[in-house]
Length: 76
Image (cartoon, rainbow, N blue to C red; front, side):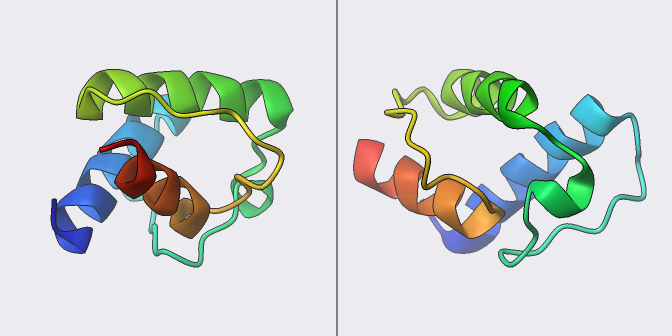
């Protein structure tokens, strides 16, 4: 899957989760900058798993969109 499609999918999930249609998301966006705590991150990972049909091992290292994209690539 291309990086652009992956980023677009994650952006859609984050916009829905945060109820913010104009949310700007890049690979460098951190979950902390979006005011997401560890429970939010777990929910986000679950939504990503469902959307991309992958299983992601939850690790403390998932702190930004780029980390999530790497985890999706590893899971594919």
